[in-house]
Length: 165
Image (cartoon, rainbow, N blue to C red; front, top):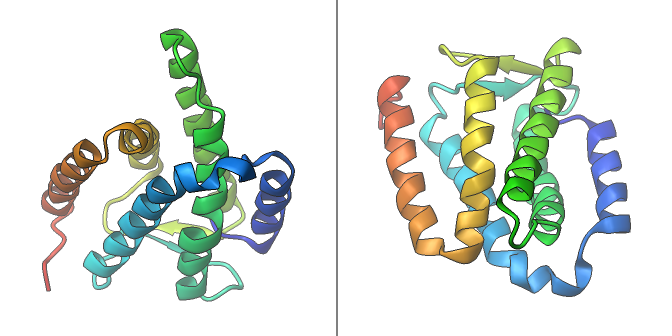
């Protein structure tokens, strides 16, 4: 998914439309997202499920995702989340899932992203369907998000036979 053009576009969009006045409100959820990615990278270092294949080294791409793109996306996603209307919340989450999934599909098509060890696009879509509501849960009730993440992480480790080394 990581591409210098994508990073520039996301930074420009976030600069223009990010809710910078309330960034502190979103800070812990953005850290939760980045830390989740770093935990994934650590646990799957010997058996990754996906990797970046751009001109940017994979480790740098991972850092850019966690420290630049996730904060930008988090600032946008959380700031505009609908407050009460359940159908609007559903449509909002589906829109973000589609956006993330389309970005990944584009990265796959231009050979900037690869699946490994049994992972495939369908799993990414399912993961995105799980991840965006989880970010909202973390924003409201962080302890629940940590519990859900732990259970989901263990399930992924089991299903994809990721060794604990």
